Amino acid sequence: MDLLTVGTYARPADDDALRALQPSLGPDRAVLGGGSWLFSAPQHHLAGLVDLTALDWAPVAADADGLTLAATATLATLADLDPSSFPQWPAVALFAGCCEALVGSRKIWHTATVGGNVCLALPAAPMVALAAVLDGRATVWTPDGGVRTAPVVDLVVGAQRTSLAPGEVLRSIRLPASALRARTALRRASLSPLGRSAALLAGRRDPDGGFVLAVTASLPRPAVLRYPDLPTAEVLAADVDALGAELRWYDDPHGAPAWRRAMTLRDAEAIRRELGDGA
Ligand SMILES: Cc1cc2nc3c(=O)[nH]c(=O)nc-3n(C[C@H](O)[C@H](O)[C@H](O)COP(=O)(O)OP(=O)(O)OC[C@H]3O[C@@H](n4cnc5c(N)ncnc54)[C@H](O)[C@@H]3O)c2cc1C
Image 1 (cartoon, protein in one colour):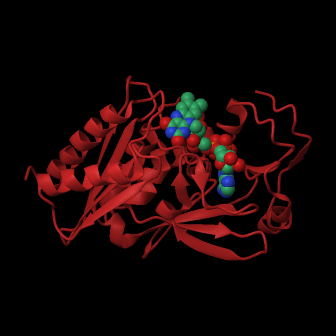
Image 2 (spheres, rainbow, N blue to C red):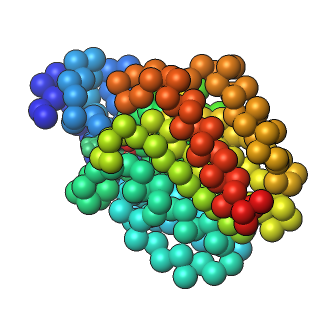
C-alpha cells in the first residue's frame, strides 16, 4: 500500500552514505529492508524511509569460523543455498525449513530480508528461530559510527520489541561453525496449513552430544534451552513448561495460550526424539 505520510526517501548506495543517514533515523524515519511488512499496513507515524536495497552487502559470506548473513539477504537467497556446498556444516539444511516457516509466496521470499524479519520481531519470526538455535550473534551499527554485537536472542525482547536504539541498524548475523556442525530439526504448528506459526521450535544436536532447543512463536520472545547431553522427556517437558510460566504463552488470533503450550510440548519432544535417534 502507499504510505501517504512518507515525504522523504533516501537510498544510500554505500556504507558511508548509510552511516551519514543513521543519526536521522528515529520514530518517524525508518529503515526499509524489503518492505514486505512496512508496505503491508498503514504507518501513520512515518515521515521518511532509508532504503537498504542498494547496499552491496554480500548476502552470505563463509569462512573457516562460520557464516555471516547480511541483514539485506533475502529469504529466497537462504532458501536456495545448497546444503551440499557446506558438507562440514549440516545445520545449513535448516535454512530452507526456516524460510518455509514464513508461509508466503516466492515473491515475498524474494523481498523479505533477514534483517527485516529479525527487527520486526514478530514472535513467529523464523530468522529469529534460526539465529537462536545456531547461537547467532547480531552486528549492529550504532548512529555514532560505532559497532556493537549482541546475541540475537537478546536483541528480540518481546513481541515486536527489540533492544535496538533509535538510529541503530542491524548489519549482519554471524553463525559460528561450532553450531553449524550440529544436526538440526524443526517443528512448526499453526491453526491452518498456510497460517502463521503459533509454535516454531528448532533443535540442534552437537557432535559432542550437546542438545539445544530454541522455542519461538509460542512465547512473546525467543527462549533457548541448553543441555550437555540429550535430556530425558520429563526434564525437557518441565523446562519447556517453565519457560511458559516465566514468559507467558503467547496469545493472539494465531493460537490460544493453552493450545500453544500443548503444541510446544509436543514439538519439543518430537525434536528430542529426532535428534536423539529415537531415544
Ligand atoms: C504473506 C506474508 C506472510 C508473512 N508471514 C510472516 C511470518 O510467518 N513470520 C514473520 O515474522 N513475518 C511474516 N510476515 C511479515 C514480514 O513480511 C516478514 O517479517 C519479513 O521478513 C520482513 O522483512 P522485510 O525485509 O520485508 O522488512 P521491512 O518491511 O522492510 O521492515 C520490517 C521492520 O524492520 C525494520 N528493519 C528492516 N531492516 C532493518 C535493519 N537492517 N536494521 C534495523 N531495522 C530494520 C524496519 O524499519 C521495519 O520496522 C509475513 C508477510 C506476508 C506478506
